[in-house]
Length: 156
Image (cartoon, rainbow, N blue to C red; front, side, top):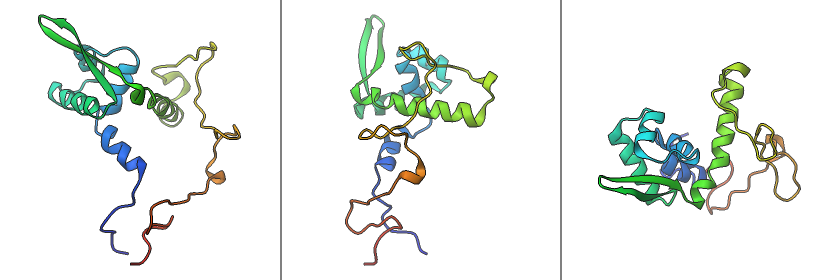
């Protein structure tokens, strides 16, 4: 089957266009951990300075981070997550949990997050309406864009 001229409209693709570039989610990780100064970001992420500058600018322009001066001489800035940025934090936690489960052994985990209740955080996606844990077999997709089905574009 030939490739569609226009890919499926998708919020995942739109989100990845903002945060899917190399280092972008790592920037968000560090900023959510409270490491929002440029030198901290360079040290903790290992990104080249020019690439990091580009990622930071894009995340600020997208409304995911804010930039605020903390020194006038020399002029230096720190970055903090906006509400939109904080709403991505559960995604980071879920990615971390997946990586811990599938890419590491129990004693190789580089970080453990503690919830305010005092226990280790193990993120679980639940249905807002019923509270049940979300499982693949319980989901049904309903495309909302005219001309698209679950299988792909409808015939023209």
